[in-house]
Each structure stands twice: as structure tokens, then as C-alpha cells.
Image 1: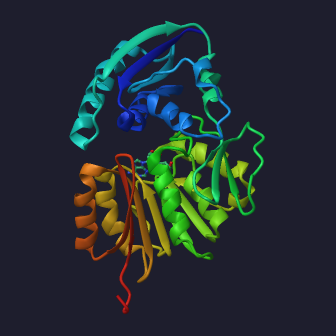
Image 2: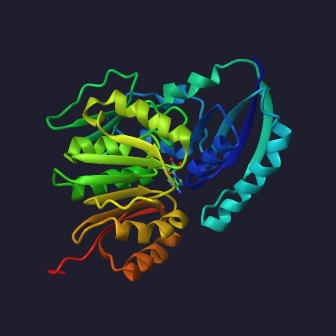
Image 3: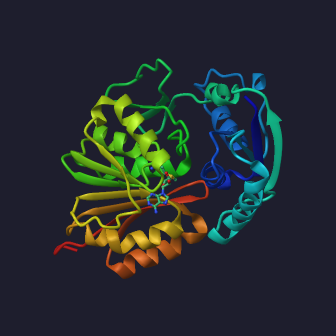
Length: 315
Ligand SMILES: C[S@@+](CC[C@H](N)C(=O)[O-])C[C@H]1O[C@@H](n2cnc3c(N)ncnc32)[C@H](O)[C@@H]1O
């Protein structure tokens, strides 16, 4: 079968957003070559990979998406170009944002990326590993999250996901109920179950992400009872939970804030990530205006995560 590869040269911070754009345009798969991933691997003394064996970018990032013959690529290219340029309006630098196309003959792309995806110990207790690796925990109490990222965001290793995982580890005490808003691969729900959260409903606007989350929930028996369904943020949800976690861009967190307020009891936690540094003040101000108390701001590279709670009588 003939496929068309559409490649976008971009920056590390725009990789996930560009992937989303390409997927929303009907891609059957996305491959990411991000120089930052290799710098990260290089910095790990326990990594047994020899990076000189792997052809990779040393600056910026390239996102390649694959479209089957049924998609008429010239028709979708202008929209892709425009949406990539528009990321700048959301505080993400897409430059140089070069979009190129070429024909590819088979489906070798579908598995090409798999060889670059390896187990990563994200926090002391949480490790993310591709479902096809036979990873053995190296320490007691290490929880191993098995993921087949498929076409949803992501491998669990993006800084915004890492900030969310760290926030969960800081806040969860066990026995909570939780909403995972923008679940993607389902990684945060699986981690939360490992940390002791009791009941979880996971939502995503994207049906492909919901399917991917269901696959991953099934791969991790601890999370077998998590319910994953399509929904726009918490629209139409009026059932309070103890904890709400959302790793979504700042612009999308803003409309979620009043919905989270409505669905949390006093003392309930609201964990947000996906916030590019420039947008932190805006998100914090909006949460405070709603009444939330900010407990912590976490940071990794250009990304920020916010731990907040709804005040109690003791606050
Ligand atoms: C950055 S990814 C986070 C995925 C995963 N939770 C993680 O931390 O790795 C954001 C996810 O939010 C979803 N999303 C975007 N807008 C949404 C909305 N309005 N309602 C629900 N989900 C949304 C996207 O489809 C995507 O899967």
C-alpha cells in the first residue's frame, strides 16, 4: 500500500501539539524524532543504549505522520500548515514549522519508532515502560506502568506527564475518587490506581485517545476498573470527586477551572499540567480568582504544573 509521509520540522515544546494536529488531520500513525529525547538518554548513566548507532536529530524536532491513500493529502496540507503556525498564538513556538511530504511504500513506519522507546523511571515509585519490553522493577515498591502509546499522546515521558505523575505522587493518600481529564494514553489513571486512588473516570475529547486509554487500562490489571469515556472536559459532569487531574494546554485548562470547582468538595485537589511557562501566571490567577488555594508549582524544562486545593474551614 502507498502512504504519504507529512513531516513537520519544529521545536521540542511544540512536538505534542504538532502530533495532535497531524492526527486530527487523519494520520494513521505519528513518528517523533526529538533531539531533546536523546539528550535525556545521554544524561542517563545507567542507559545501555549507544546513541551513535541511532540516526537522530541533534537540534529541534521532526514529527512525521502517515496518511493512507484514502486521504487526499494536498487537501489537508493548507490546514496543517495554518494550524502549526497558529500554535504561536497559544504560546508554543512551532518554528521553523517547515512542512514537507513524500511518498512511502509500506508500513515499516508503524514499528520504526518502537525501537527508540525504552523504560523510564519517572519518579521514585513510578516507572513507565513500553508494553513489549520485559522490564523488571529494580527496587521494592516500584510500580511499573505498561503502555502501548499507539496513536494517543504519549509515551508517558513528556515533561507535562512527568509533572502530573509527580503531583499525583505528592497528593494521593489512598482511597480517593478521581477524574482524569484529557486522559490520552491513560497513563495518569494507571499511575493513580497504583498509588491507591479508588474510583477513577477518565475523559478525552478524542475517541482515538479513549480507545488507546482502554487498551492501556487493560494492559495494567490494577487499572481494570477505571472507566474511560469521551467527553469535552467536565461538561455535563456533576458528581463530586476528591481529586481532578488534567494535563492539557493552558488555554483548555481555563474553561476547566469552574467545572473543577463545581466537582470538588472542600479540601479536594486540582492538579493541572501542560502549562507552558509564559502562561503560568494566567492559569494561577484564574484558579485563585475561582477560589482555589495554590499549594505548589512544579517545573520541568519550559513546562509548569500546579497543585491546588479547594479551601477548607482551616484555610
Ligand atoms: C497533553 S495530552 C495528556 C495525556 C495524558 N493525560 C498524559 O498526561 O500524558 C492532552 C489530552 O487532552 C485531550 N483533550 C484536549 N482537549 C480536550 C477537551 N476539551 N476535553 C477532553 N480532553 C481533551 C487530548 O485529546 C489529549 O489526549
